[in-house]
Length: 284
Image (cartoon, rainbow, N blue to C red):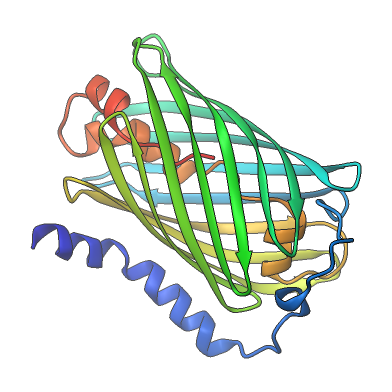
């Protein structure tokens, strides 16, 4: 009962955002949903996105940061994406902790069908004398009309000596070409997390777009957080949100997931070292 109550509470921002966006927009369905052409390139030209995100922590303090991605076509069927994240956690016993992450994705993609590729990342926080998590694995996605199924699985190694398998899966739906809602589940080193999120591209102008997003997380102990922000897209043509996810850059590194990995122990009264080694990070 406690878990259900917190799940509903921490997801209110996501529900509010997606409901408002759905009522405000009623665009014609995008042609990409039914596009079965195999001639589409894996990446529709060099593109980038930049996100500013943050949230107040429980009991005072704050978390804020910036993340960005760039994607490049490698021939016709392959692509490369580079991610970067920099953020700060301050409060609840974690004072001025800087958090950084970088990731690379090498993938094959048909924008009308799906994606498969390899992934690697490094996540670092200035905790203790420095704490780093290295992750590598495979990722994939299927595009089923307005539905998208995405997943990643691999191995993570942490500075404290733990090496464990990790994985997550997400189901996303586009009720409108510029609105994405998603649910997800992930696990790492005995910890589990559930995700609910939404993104609404409310401005499109030329080759750029601006969206608002909310991500909320609940762990298997019923503790959770929500983080919100603005995202700016840059690329070829005036694309809708669904096109940007399928023709430009796939999922990328997220400050919200990194923050959950490194801050949950202090926020929820556990030992930080245990939290850092046991909490789940959904960072792609």
